[in-house]
Amino acid sequence: MDNWVGDTKYLEETLVGARIKEVIEDSIAFEVGLESGDRVLSINGQPLVDILDYQFYSKDDNITLEVEKNSGERWFIDIEKDYDDELGLLFDEVVFDRIRVCRNRCVFCFVDQLPADMRKTLYVKDDDYRYSFLFGNFVTLTNLTESDWDKLESMRLSPLYVSVHTTSGQLRQQMMKNPQAAHIKEDLMRLKKAGIQVHTQIVLCPGLNDGAELLTTINDLADLYPSVQSIGIVPVGLTGHRQGLPVIGSFTSAQARELIEQANRWQDKFRSQWGTGLVYLADEFFIKAGLPIPPNEYYDDYSQIENGIGLTRLFLDDWREIIVDLPSEVEPTEAYLVTGESAAVLMQSVANDFNRIKGLRVGVVTVPNQYFGGNVTVTGLLTGTDIINCLQNDYKGKKVIIPEVLLQEGSTIMLDDISVEEIAFRSGAVLRTTDGSARSLAEAVLY
Image (cartoon, rainbow, N blue to C red; front, side):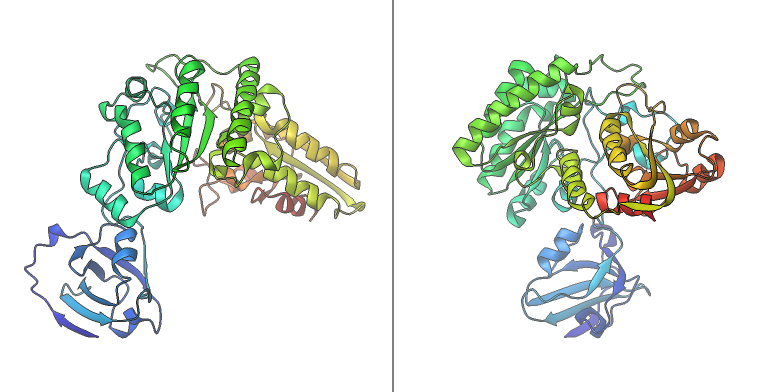
């Protein structure tokens, strides 16, 4: 391993680089003198614009790091190592240049329907294929440059998560208000030829991409199997803040039931062909239709769990496993479960199970979503404002349980910047949070 100081007149603006957060002790990076705050500019002459570049180029057994030290010096460090040996660097971010933002103006975009007084980060519409590969974020593929495609193909970034909505180029362009949206079939075929697997999403809007359009879309996507690994269908979310936006209707119970019947026929067909259901409906459709959540087999590998597809089934199955281990009697205890309207029936059934335990009283606090309004009923979009308005002073001194899905990751702050502590202060309730699992809920209620 050798290092030397380079020319500080190098055109820095041509390189973004990755600022080091931490150097693991006794690692290769530690041995060559790298420190927190240094910036890795390139590996073997390849500029680093994201963590994918770092992971890809740092695998070689002979590499040259170009580093800008905290002092401003430019170092070039030659390293010989075994292939795949880790350098021992941790970074603050996974994207070192800037996140790719959405260039579409989708008629159903949820961000465009947000109230005006939320924190600024919630209005950022990301559409970054790197976040799709790393975190499962859905992207539209409409902002990819040819160099992006080259990177996707050369690094084999698979799987990706793609918002399709429709395979009709004309309709997709109309729905997304972007000429690039019309190329979805060509884009998906290019991914297939590159050997990249895709999980697709359809935000279903009554009167736009349902009915015959949906049938065509499903057939087109199925033709791309096994590159297309799953097709998730979710209902359009409509808030009460759609001023100036196109009129879109909500699904009725009858429409939800009809869709479920059609999706079951698709699943039967694809299971007989390939042994997989391929098409999966969001839990909301079953709740809207008043029908039972499908069994575990319906969801195969739960590939779209982050899309709200199968979450209820996982919870129900976990609940069945732990309910047999619950005590038959406890010291007198009272607790209340906060939920959105769509999960109220489910949580009431859980409360009923709890109430079979002698000494335990569990109730359900169903919170209407006044903050967003419209047809927003999911628990994950409840705000501190709505919870405070619902609790008022009626639960003073009582245990109230809130799922962590309501909170900003790593904090106690909700979508409207109200904290759990503020809810507790203003309501007088004793708040507990759960991670959403059945076991966590049981622990919060019982202990």
